[in-house]
Length: 191
Image 1: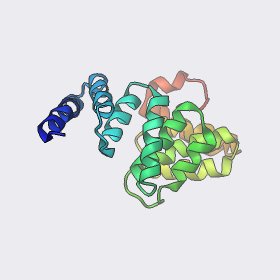
Image 2: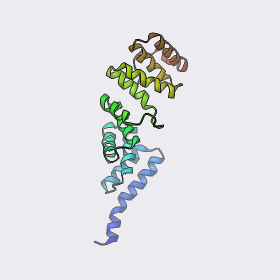
Image 3: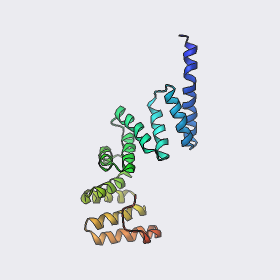
Image 4: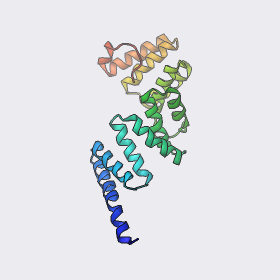
């Protein structure tokens, strides 16, 4: 086979990858996803492309497609906390409570990135009826994000469920102070 012919055959895939990266960096994720898919179909086997395409799918709410890409990435790199977090987040968004809890707990507790996982874990444990674990996770989330009204509001819901009415009242009032619109919200978990 002529090497020039082989190079020419790779050009469309490489061009698609480059164009996908440009669109991704410009924030045009929907278009970037199309280019990444064309690059993969054209023979680009770089695992970074799966990450980018997975993020595009995730941003567009195409969780099934995003999960497929992150499943491959986690199988290839089982110790990569970002890939695990993304898969856990997708599972969180799709209602796979036990899968999301499992993934989010695989990230080392002292890992500085993905701290929002404590909020997700609190919601997931609450949904699973494990109020003690939900309380532990929401306390960590509050310590990391003390000005996020949604976390304070969910802390109130979780504390109420855990029988801590006084603390729940304080959490709800803090949430409303930070975001007055929450004053009229039903006291149910916010996702």
